[in-house]
Amino acid sequence: MGLLAFPRTSGAQAAGDPIIDIHQHVGYSGRPDEVLLSHQRAMGITTTILLPSGRPAVRPSTHDGGSNGLQAQALGNDACHAFAQAHPREFLFGANDVPDVEGATQEIERQLARGAVIIGEQKFGVACDAPEMQAIYRLAESRRVPVLMHWQFGMYNHGFERFHTMLAKYPRVTFIGHAQTWWANIDANHLDQKVLYPKGSVTPGGLTDRYLRDYPNMYGDLSAGSGLNALTRDEAFTRDFLTRHQDKLLYGSDCNDLVGSGEKCQGAQTIATIRRLAASKAIERKLLHDNATRVFRL
Ligand SMILES: [Zn+2]
Ligand SMILES: [Zn+2]
Image (cartoon, rainbow, N blue to C red; front, side, top):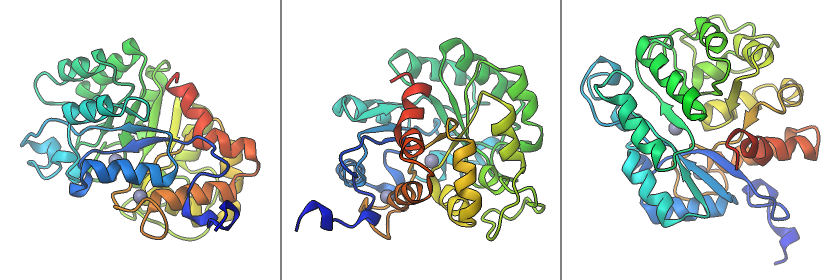
């Protein structure tokens, strides 16, 4: 069977184009290291950024420990660093900690000092403008790394509607939005914030759409079921959205399957969806690769 017979929907590399995945985890749902490696290769990923969990803690911001491991058995700073060290051409790593735990900024600093390229995934039950979060934003500013935040109404990073105050206060910090509440709010008619995976047609001008339009430091992470849902719920909207924000959106997978292709792999489906709905090859390349090289200075 020749290359031309290879199903395009598999998400496998088209013509060897490089792809940067800005959102994966070590130990995700118990996935072994060698399967993470084969999963990323099967998806056609050339560079993966591994996002650590914070240190385990029992307190309100981790929902008394229920959100440890990013609620996904994701491993922490040392495991991500070690994995990237073992596969230096293919993997980079982030820095993270529970923001209101004693010594959080020092722990994040420790990981940045050994080469972390991002702070995140910040997925904790804290206000987005809390003093502890602002300490992280100041660290990101001084170390010139982005901050990736999981927005989930009532659960993680409270106060999405007032996040513009942080975007304005920290204009030199690159913020990357991710997850349900981030993606639900592309729609100006998203009225019930308890709905996390809205379906159907999208009216442009939602809060997320405006943050991307109005703030040069606001970026979007296309990963996870929430990202794929947002891309597929109204394809006419999506073609226009990808064009308008072509310099602000970054491919990530954030999938925990063992396969890396086909129906079981949401990350592969997201790649296929971007290829199908991007209005030009140039836009496709920005979303799958070029924007990440700029944001992460790769
Ligand atoms: Zn994640
Ligand atoms: Zn997958």
